[in-house]
Figure 1 (cartoon, rainbow, N blue to C red):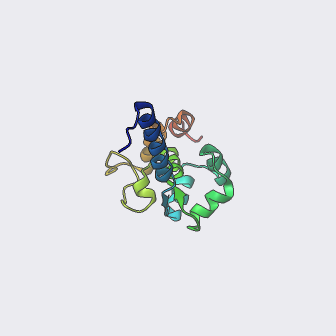
Figure 2: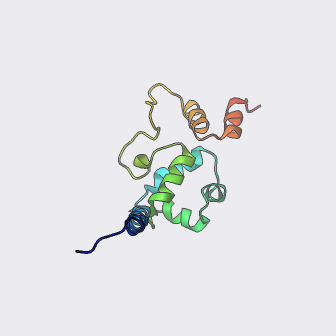
Figure 3: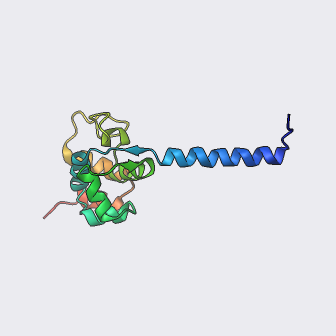
Length: 133
């Protein structure tokens, strides 16, 4: 039986953590492209603007919206965060696009305002609060 020194054990733990982390981030998820496109458009992002916001190529975003490519867990989290929704909604596990609150009785403009505030997009909040005239 071989004795493992504490520094070797720490190194092995680091290696195992890296392996686990890499496997978790490589998990692929099929995004509901229709939901993604509808949320992006509801937030008034062009495909180019949104791709830049989430640090993704425009063509890759297009593939997600058409259901032609799976997203990694990392990309899915960035998309959900930027759109003020949940990953569960984007992959079709729930029909409620709003995280942690029920949208019963809220108007679409109120939902957009809350979503913008939750993601910290204060320019969008101001834009939604000011009248169009």
